Amino acid sequence: MMTTIVRNGSFELDLPPREALLLFTAPGERLWISEWDPKILHGDGFEAGTVFITTNHGPSTYWQVCDFDRDAGHARYVRVTPESDTGMVDVRVSSNNTGGSTINVTYQLTGLTPSGNDKLSTAYSAPDYAAMLQNWQRMIRDSRATIDEFFRNRER
Image 1 (tube, rainbow, N blue to C red):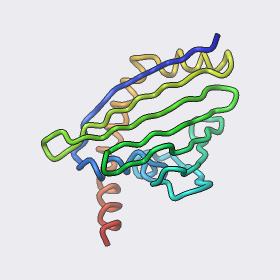
Image 2: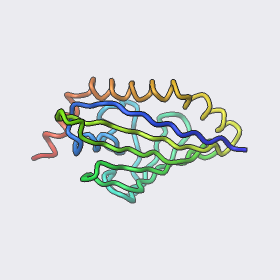
Image 3: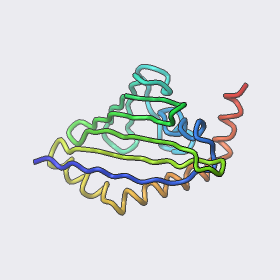
């Protein structure tokens, strides 16, 4: 039997929701994850239907943007790492009523192989998932100069 994990967590950012959501796109994550280098095959990275590949965690992972609604603060991705796992990543961004955002991220992944099951049980344990989200918050905070420059250039 294949393992399915569902992990959910949230963190705060001092960015408005419409900006914060863009940080959780193929091009947006380049602003705060140094090893993130998605190869976009279709779309622009900011729209439903975008397809891209990542290799920053070893084997290739294939992604498709299922939903992207900037007004609703919602992005959903399907991802497949052949011979390992597949599933959904759901990002919801809402106002925290202080000018910033609450970022809620849900991973639902299913192993495709015994080694995929092992990966899900170890790399996505509840404590490791919580630590991953804390690390994301720290990396985004540490990258604010780059992020702020990105948004200034988008406004032009």
